[in-house]
Image (cartoon, rainbow, N blue to C red; front, top):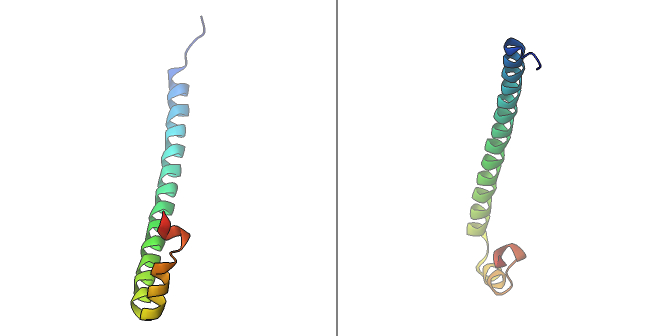
Length: 70
């Protein structure tokens, strides 16, 4: 039967846990940044739609973009 080195195993698992937590924090930061960019772009779209001429808005309603069809 193989000897189990609990101390060494605990250190290895603890190090992997630290690495996984750091990766999670990095991915979460990227997610937050992307969510902020999407929110900013939505605000710009709303602003631009508000400034859009009525004729152009009617034409867009008649011919929606592929994104609007989904």
